[in-house]
Length: 71
Image (cartoon, rainbow, N blue to C red; front, side, top):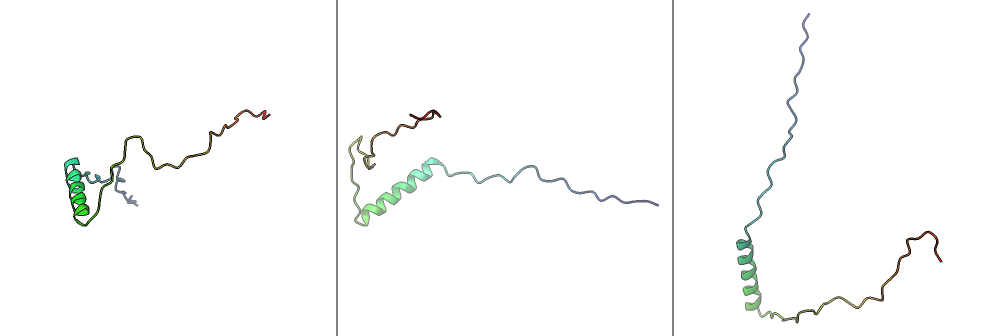
């Protein structure tokens, strides 16, 4: 009496290659095109001085006591 053994194919160990990101020059040119379209449609670019932020003033620092003997 003979027995046949089924052989399973090996599991894939490598995933398929990911798509390569576009070159930076391609991205820069698309941004330039978008800016031109924005300005042509009547948009305006506002220049902001260095150091200016849109962040709202936050209350003073909060001190966290990590010591288990809280006073």
